[in-house]
Amino acid sequence: MSIINDLRLLEIAWLLIICLACYASGKTIVQWFIRLETASRIEDVLFCLALGLGCLSLITLGIGIIGGLYAWVFWILLSGTILLYWGNKLKSAIGSFSCRDKSQKSKIILPPFFISLLLAIILFLIIILELVPTMTYDAMVYHLAVPAKYIQAHRIHYIPYICFSNYSMNMEMLFTIGLLLGSDTLAKFIHLMF
Image 1 (cartoon, rainbow, N blue to C red):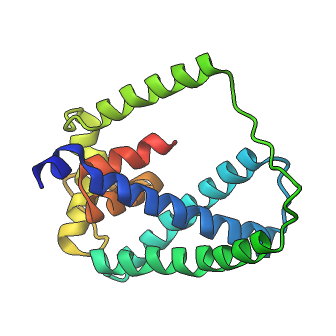
Image 2: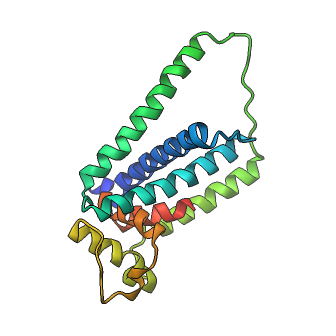
């Protein structure tokens, strides 16, 4: 069990769940409300993920205002979003896979090996840096301190001794989810997504 704690696998799993839920909510907004067609898959993923993270930030703000900053609230919210969106996608994918013409072959375009290897090494080093405990001034005094106070009170409230807590805090709302579901490592992984 200590290897799971050392590698912070739970935080990585929560990050994946948050990404899937944010993409699902962003894709739903793009399809139903904005009615926007994206040009490529990467543009679709980036735009929908960013839109979903913005929505999650606003939802966290609303939940915090009404005093519902509990881990179980976000478990239900994230898992419900994933089940609703990805369950429908899985059903349609199974249906289209069974009806697909066997003579068609899908084409996979891979980047050059050297670029892929270089990106993998850089990503590995960044992930190692994210696993180090937080020690910077901004993170300890503001970015993680304010969400920690909100979590202690289970709501968003006025903090007179941290003057920066009066500013709008979209990132801090995402850090609140990270601290609520995991630790400062999950909050740093959420920051790494950007």
